[in-house]
Length: 184
Image 1 (cartoon, rainbow, N blue to C red):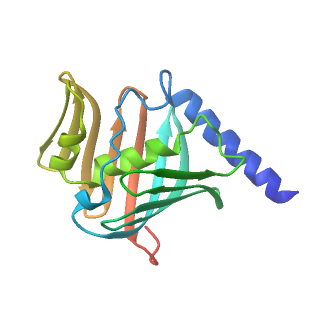
Image 2 (image 1 turned 45 degrees about the vertical axis):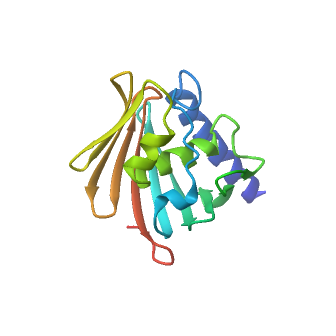
């Protein structure tokens, strides 16, 4: 009974944020990237702590990320419960979602946001459709639609990224640590 209450609370919190954060399409009007795992150019094994801020509210979740030249795997944990798993091999996307994880919160958006933040700029630029541009200046990466900044990503520390999605009106603070060591 207590587990069901925790799941219901987690689902309600995420739904509330998602509803407030996404007035338009759930993807925030950003084209999907679906970058090849090999285009990352390195392997990753990270534990990431995400703080989502939307409409003046915060929700925290953890993402376990593994990437090698053949696969990207993500496990999303919200309120201590496994919410979703995503696998991407460059061709096929596999997804498992907990029954309590709201459909209004697309796990594929987490994959795209992560790739936009961590993959090399050249790989991101090559995947964008006409009219979209990705650029970097210092520690800031910007994704723009016909010159209008839609996503602004700032590296504010060695392991901290601030991610602002302007169309969907949400912010992510992403703190990364090697897997097996908790993100601060």
